[in-house]
Amino acid sequence: MRRVGILITIFLLLGTSVIGQQLLSGNIFDEQNVPIPFAKIFVKNSAEMRTVTDANGYYEMRLFPGEYFLVINASGYNERETYVVLNEAPVKRDIQLFPITVKELQDVEVSVKKSNPGREIMLKVVNKRDSISPWNYSHTVDGYIKATEKIDKKVKEDKKKNDPSQTTDPNRIEDPFETERKKQTELADNMNLVEVQFKRYFAPPNKVKEVRNAYEKRGNEQNLYYITTVKSNFNFFQNLLHLDDLHQSPVSSPISGPGILSYKYRLEDQYEENGRKISKIKIIPRSTATTTLEGYIWVIDSLWLVQKLELTLNKGNLLVYDRFTVRQTFEHPGDSICVLVKQELDYGVKYKDQTSSCKTIADFSNYSFNPEYTKKFFGNELSVTEQEAYDKDTSFWNQARKVTLTQEEQAFILAKDSIRDYQNRKEYLDSVDAVFNKVLFEGPMVWDRPPEQGK
Image (cartoon, rainbow, N blue to C red; front, side, top):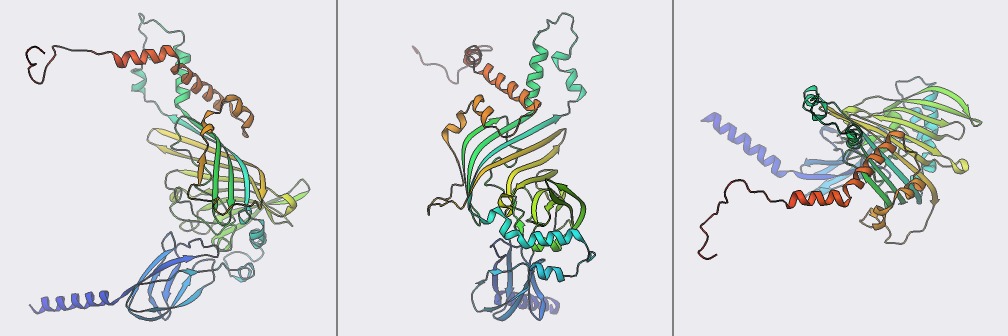
């Protein structure tokens, strides 16, 4: 009984301590009000009282009423202290952190040689990133997207044996068009393709509106990514990329102050192109648990502008796909800004006996910077598709298409259009109606109850 009494007393004390605490919560943001994931928050002089923000920069702590000095730090950001008073009610406190400056980064001890030219080049790019980033300026741009999925299905031998076209029955009448029809059907079933033409309106930091004036879908778009620009923005000139439908956690950019501490930079090659020296720099993550990009960035020396990049996301952090690579190409009007003109996404996934290989190519042209928007121009509706967008014919796409179709894509479109035209023929529609309208009775008619006399 004495042991039971002691346990009851302990539970009561624990319950009293929990009841006496108050909730302190909030969000940790960077200088652009982007949430910082996995930032550490602890009470000064009581480090055991600590917490960490989640992937969306949100934190919670339970503390007794009183006065506290909180310390907040995150990799690549200046540590900050803040004063908080808790009384008898929950407190919400949002806190902003600022990235370490390039000068401070140059003094940071990292596990690389001090003479690493790759890191020094990227420091100069990061030092200019606010002025060279197109996402820091309002603009409009015309865009075209082509997204293609190739499907590789492994057909088992037993299925082939059960295929009527594989039988060798001597009495079977061969259809002279059967082989070609089967080829066209397989081609139509083993690919999906979406084309979009649009105008995109943007205002910093993240106001966007996309107006689609042409849209063509052939097949299924389920596995295709980036067929709209409002869902994910691969802006590597910011500290973190929030790709919620693609990646488990925000992605640290290698073109940022925090990224300088998260990645290794190795100068792999230097060459001249159009009278300019180009440096090819390899990007290596220090820890795949927190930094998941690996690849290359090409920099124009002396101007410190990004010419192009090729970065691959680590497989272990992808939500759906097994692989995902981003390639971007920039132009530099006035040698003062990096304007994105082409983006290529190469990705895929394997499921059971089916392998899906996808590629999305986006072309951007006719930029207009610093447009004037009305006060209510940007609303809740981010993407608008005009009604006539679905009515564009082949001749329109032949003129509007910014990316040349491959021979396989051309054959797929012909096959898909041929099947569509055939299924829209009057003879085919009449045959379908005949099948559905035909009533078959097997055996005697059975009534739920005897019919009334005279009925």
